[in-house]
Length: 250
Image (cartoon, rainbow, N blue to C red):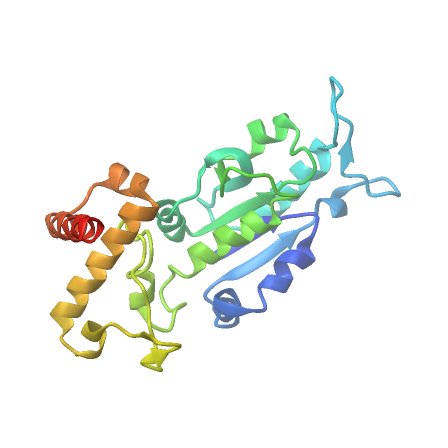
């Protein structure tokens, strides 16, 4: 998969590409990531990429000329069908489902904004989609771009060492993840649950699903309300709630 990032700070992107899952994906040639700096498309000695907003107000706005030129240059390096995506607070929420959709694309262009954002005319003419990673304020779009990069890259075939990892993760089934344990069995008096030591795969799977359902109900009930539960998961949730009620009245 080929990805281009339009950013004023390409070193931020390149630095992250040297580590972890993204680094391995790039090293194996499974993901190719390029950067295009709008400053390279300026014509003044100061390489100006921002200016004061019309109508007044605080902050600066990224100028349309260098941003447009950077987007066009980067987009030409991508295969046909690659969308131009702006990381924006006004965008649709980035979810696991959207990451899966992006992972099927031949490529994509990510535009990382700065300051008060892009001139609206650039968004109207050169952006296909706007995506937000959350309802909070960041200094720029580089970290959101890396979030999208990482979430999408790990879904590509061959990126993860164990392909089950991308299938058995939080949100993939609409539930949070279950608890994980490793050696030693006893750590500071806290022991690994007996069921995980027994080697009975059906019991382990049942325990894991029950833990995932319980965690989701306690911490993110909105996920259950949004996606619903399977019959097995519903039965395990009822079992958990009955046990919880018994503990509270016990």
